[in-house]
Image 1 (cartoon, each protein chain N blue to C red):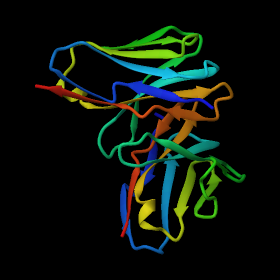
Image 2 (image 1 turned 90 degrees about the vertical axis):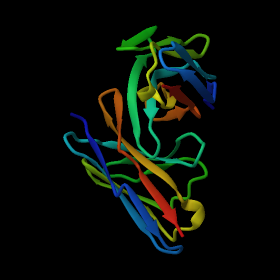
Image 3 (image 1 turned 30 degrees about the vertical axis):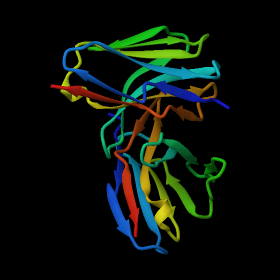
Length: 112
Length: 113
């Protein structure tokens, strides 16, 4: 069974710092990997989607990489801002795209 | 495009009553919708896959008689929590298939007193 792990569980940084969030998964037979943002009490917002054949995706200050063979993905946030404070979740989908497996998230706090 | 609307956003009910949560795809048709549950400080957990016109597929450990799912049209799936108990208090989120991406509702916070 697929297991998704995120490290660290929580992270507090001063504004302006660059940071990296880590995600690992046990079964490399994935269809794609997504990074989400979750604000307290709200639904998920999709940040980046990486297909299994891709190595990375970029959107603004966000860059996500995927190393499928080693079962790892990283989310890089450049020049962090207080508005980036949220919980970040990664999730992988199975090859037949009928299930999502989520990590437990990294709670990020960016201090002004 | 690809907006998923979930209603209500929060609900409080008494123990033993039933609560219905709606998930609508507003500008696209979704043959498949997913229902998740999130307990505090835990990850989202898939509860069931809702398929339009057929029975939902439940994940292991999820009681299908307690969490009734109906996907009667291509734009609406409903989750009914029957005979709710305080331990059912949680954050419920739906998502709908659109292309290769999933789009999520804003969630429903259920509190059972």
